[in-house]
Length: 266
Ligand SMILES: Cc1cc2nc3c(=O)[nH]c(=O)nc-3n(C[C@H](O)[C@H](O)[C@H](O)COP(=O)(O)OP(=O)(O)OC[C@H]3O[C@@H](n4cnc5c(N)ncnc54)[C@H](O)[C@@H]3O)c2cc1C
Ligand code: FES
Image (tube, rainbow, N blue to C red; front, side, top):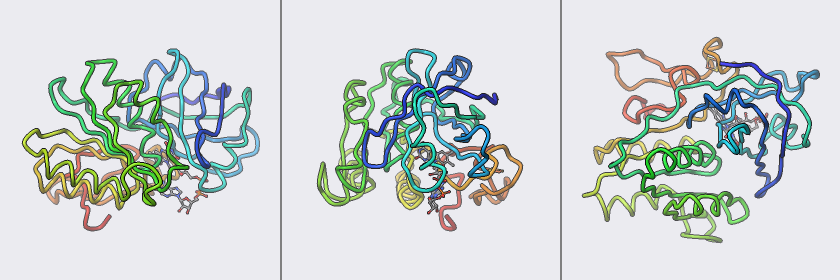
């Protein structure tokens, strides 16, 4: 784990309130894995807001540049969006466990809701590089204005299907509806599912996967104050009463096998 102040190479709006930021860090780029995250602070001197914010590593460009993809939802992300090329940000990472890769022969299904695409794009990039995996991806956004990264996913040769809640692009509905449809047609070829997005979406997907006896990994995005295992603010209830009662998402996760989480209380 490193603590670094890095220089921003680009920070551009690529969708409604959605920004792609790149910053140079050869050290981090050499050791970051898909599913891991960074705790980022937007100001070196001001400490406003006080706490760092967690962001998934979204990809690596030209071996030395790391990217994050983020949506403005509050003060921290709003301050990040105002930063320009050459400005500095402070970060700690890479943190968390990251995804377990599927075997090269396994069918791989990625399901992303909104900014859940951030870590799953990195996973798709890494899987294509490692084994040229066949990847199917379901992507859901509220409206067409929020849709991002589809061209880059097509360039990676990912078989992509899209949903929007208002039907302005792709199928109308939720991305979990698309998964339900797919599984009802193709359950003979069992995929390994990787999902990231809002908790209600993950709950639906995890419960479906458990019912269908499919391997499913979820990347949780809960509130985090420290990201380092100190504050206990990121605890989620574990499913197995024989093991530990709670998982610390920042330390044990953020990626979990679906059946290890108690979804009833999520
Ligand atoms: C491991 C991890 C990886 C993440 N990766 C990304 C990413 O790649 N891209 C991205 O855009 N976001 C990501 N997030 C969420 C991101 O950390 C929050 O959006 C960010 O901290 C909000 O900061 P803020 O100061 O702008 O908003 P705040 O002022 O803190 O909050 C504004 C609003 O957003 C809601 N909110 C804040 N944090 C979360 C959260 N973690 N989950 C659900 N709702 C929240 C609050 O309830 C509030 O309504 C990730 C979170 C975790 C834990
Ligand atoms: S965020 Fe503090 S312990 Fe996980």
